[in-house]
Length: 350
Image 1 (cartoon, helix red, strand yellow):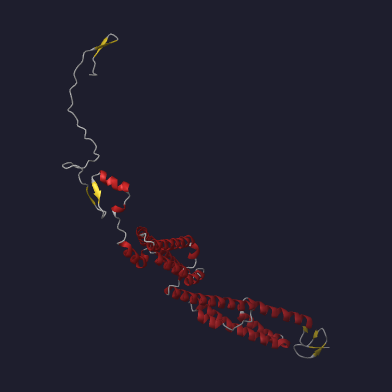
Image 2: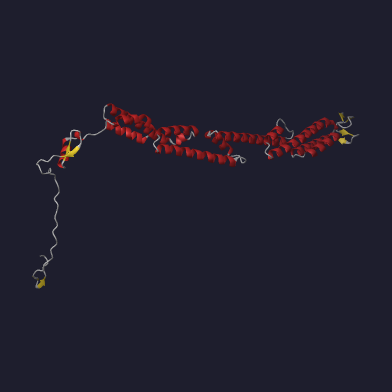
């Protein structure tokens, strides 16, 4: 004996005569109709699924509780679907915060709807994150923190909503970078080595990648600094050893190479300036003799004056090139004809 699922009477095991049902067919039909309800839910036809579930709850009273629970889930999904459509509208308007709040902590009974909700919420959260990154990058750019700003703008360059703005900012940062490099080159060309080193340090802080890009320039600056230090030491040594002309030449060269050394080296140059006068009296004898040949005499003070005449009334002899006197031209005179091989030929040799 078996209890009839509809009339709740005791019947045989195959079916109920009062309800005119066969138990096996009844169960099969219930499973098929229940499956149809789930198919409607999966394609988003929630209203139709609800109507069918309500009808099945009457057709299959033994599973009425199951259908009531199913209807409750469908009603919840209907509410969630409404929120999902509202969130879509907010998303399309760019109101991502509101869309995220609307979709937070809700889970649909329908797996398809649940997946759509998760996807939309993640998209809205990503746009919120990108918007925050954009604001942060703009703030960093305003504060001239170009390296950090560029990193954020590069992340935003793949976002269609912010691609144009990010590209424009990246181009602006590249212009600033080139301007900084040009300022560094101008300092080097104008002989401002210390300023160039400061600008190079600031450039590396602002754009770390330039440390690798400008490696040859770094090497050149280091070598130049080393040479400058060695020349400065040599100039100081020459001054200490009273080799004033050598010291003056070195100090002048260093000032010409790097104008920023003037505050430290100019006093040394001015100090030895009066000590670098050259006296002709210090010249070797052969040089003094050369002046005497020209009729000049080197005094004990190192000055030049005309040499005294060796004989009264005569000027000191000097090697003077002779002056050639050109005579007036003479006319050619005809000569007697010369016989050559039986022919008379005038002779113009005279």
